[in-house]
Length: 191
Image 1 (cartoon, rainbow, N blue to C red):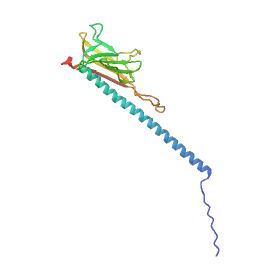
Image 2: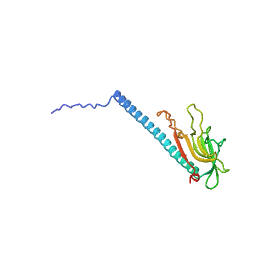
Image 3: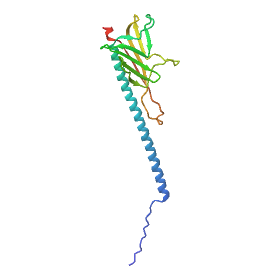
Image 4: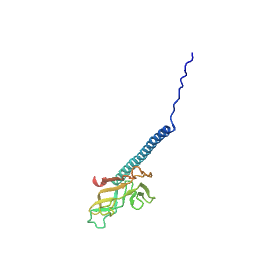
């Protein structure tokens, strides 16, 4: 008995089908990698801004604590009848009679602190002081005096840009500045 052999042909993918499948896979892989790259950049930007915000708050808290415990504030207004003075530098004595100077250098955008005659220490980088509507600079430290020499309130207005070195082309290169505003009064003058 002779049975006819059934010829089975194995059918595979043609070259065109393989090229189409590879094209689809490469498009999906490219889209996935681009979105993953954007995700890493956004994470980096958020991390930089969060750390700058925390550091800025710690520095502002430290400055306000020094002012609360300080005495002998300066600079004093030129006219004793003046009650308010806006400046980028202030000096005072702390509770251990050390002279502390806080200075905002607008050109290098750095907030410095100097204790006695020691070298200046960097407190914050990327700091700008306030500006009014026409673009003129206002003092970062607003000192309010009573009787021309008694400090009753010190206010601080600083804007800090996040220290972000990455170029966020996908996110638009926008680094949101953080505004730090604080106000305090010396305790020794209150009690």
